[in-house]
Image (tube, rainbow, N blue to C red):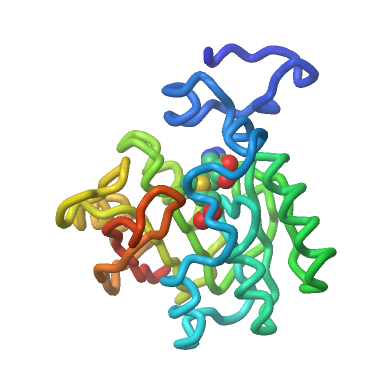
Length: 219
Ligand SMILES: C[S@@+](CC[C@H](N)C(=O)[O-])C[C@H]1O[C@@H](n2cnc3c(N)ncnc32)[C@H](O)[C@@H]1O
């Protein structure tokens, strides 16, 4: 996939830059959802997110960055919170909106690029990244962290659930604690409050893959 800028009509990326994952695969993210669920789409919220929510981890307006087909956003919204899920994959968003209709849970799903979140013109007290950060390479992370900072309220909380580099049978994009601390730090408006071991469930791991759940505060 090239980075050429064509007309929007023939541009599956709608004018945005392809992410490293899209350059690697040669396909837009949307393609992952067209022939059935992709490996990360387990058809239910991630247990780590369910636990976090049950502990009162979500408050105020919530943004789910890279929401996919919306299971985590729907779960958080079912607890009574106002949730916006954004993604670049229109097929995933269409599936998420069908779930809204089927389940009668109010969640807003919108097409948006997580590298341009300031365009939303909204602020959030809690932001969730479930399985997105680990798809970005090192040179994409500063722009992503800045974009997240532009929509996260002072003292708000960002949760990142990502594959970890800890232990055997790591996922496809292992992230170290140092990677997280390099991406989110005092110099770019973040304070990493905690990085705890957890699991990410996938369609191809029996008991999930090693993960970190990072709690990162906006300063
Ligand atoms: C690994 S999936 C995780 C999806 C969902 N959070 C979940 O747990 O099932 C990453 C998601 O991020 C979305 N994504 C990737 N790059 C994006 C971008 N620049 N802006 C918005 N969404 C993006 C993809 O379309 C995909 O749905």
